[in-house]
Length: 318
Image (cartoon, rainbow, N blue to C red; front, side):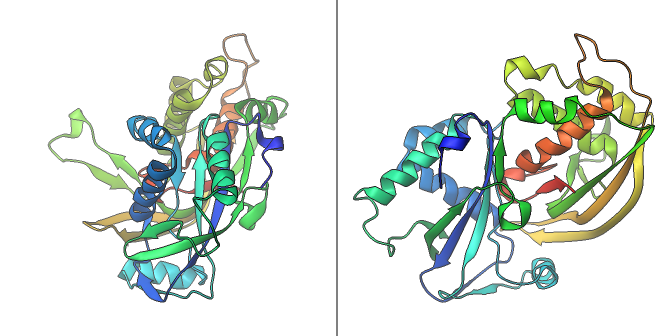
């Protein structure tokens, strides 16, 4: 893992490749366990960083996946729905995807790992790294190179994302394709709906997906880039049905947390974005469709929807 090429990045997505130290079993969806274990590891390695992340939870400065088993997606979906605990084998490798959403975080994480590797805190490959429930894992490798692990790792800056879309010349109709690889849902409910309570939306409607991503952009982007996304205009564009679903391969899905069953969906969804685009201005340097594509790139790092810090809502543009 080399840090020199990543020094100017704000956003990171990497895999921690892990090996269990003994045979055992683990619940198939364990994102909340990973979330807690990741913070516990940081507390022991860098208490001030863990405190900052915990206090900054409203901004959600990181995401964690559930532990990824070396099984087919069909087997994993079935196990998740039925909450069938899966075997752990010390001869096999498992992995966790982590994303960091602030430029200050990765250098700290990198230095911690280098200190562990070279110092007395980890004296051999047999030293435990992280514990999920009663199962302990060793760290084998960190994968952060762009395009690694099936295209789910990489790094970049908010400037990179803006420059990627600024020069796009869009036709009258543009198609956008999103993949939702882990359970995704949107927690809905408001004062106007309090008589009915909260509920979980199981379709990635444009007015659920993109205003939420616009809010994340405002929370995460450096001040000089916040204005590149206008949430109100995106909401208006979505509600006016200038963007709509044209195709999908979505499946209703559910996973078991320790205290409740969480409904949602997985799969792929395609959208049509209609133009024409308004010319750029000083206050709106990107068109609405450029902003939506920009937010789709951001989703690779921050996820979409509910409980992204606990393994839900991992998504990317395909």
